[in-house]
Length: 217
View 1 (cartoon, rainbow, N blue to C red):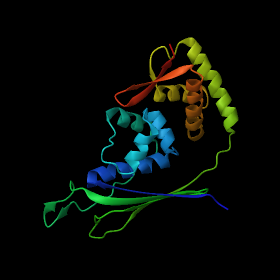
View 2 (cartoon, helix red, strand yellow):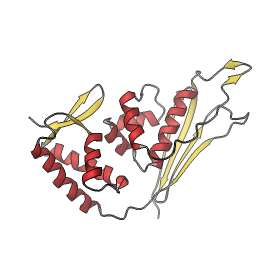
View 3 (cartoon, rainbow, N blue to C red):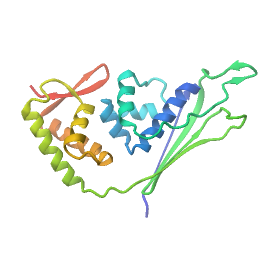
View 4 (cartoon, one colour):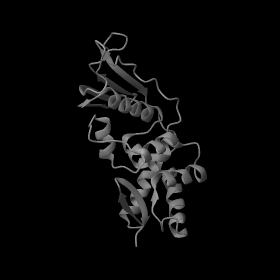
């Protein structure tokens, strides 16, 4: 029997806040990144990304986040929902409205469904995102072994004497280890970095809500 996971969420957002999150979700899944993967590369906690995608208006992405996203998201920029922003000549785009979302994941596909109150060309219809899930062919164990060797070399070389964000580690591994395997590289790298933290070879530093990695003193 196929695995089936369903998550429901909702929040009060204006049109601009919803569009930001809708585009973020589209770009993340089109680039084969999980919530945990993108959180790692942004230097954020997983809860930050989960809350952002779950329509919490208390969670924002800052300039540093957008710089990293511009580097990571290689697929074409998705079309932005062209909501009607005025009703009877009154601008409603900044009014917060209730948005409901559902995420359904099976072994074969990822399906997002958003119910919103706005119209596009006078018609109100839910927005959907459907993404087939690609199977990975390279063994995680083989990749993780390569990453452990290279991360240990960097640690011995003094790479982490100063704090390093995950995106710089990722850039190095992408160039020097496996440049063609981004979808598999990120979760494997995240796992290996956390292994180094558990073994106290590295430690976490949190500055202004962003996570960095440094040699444990």
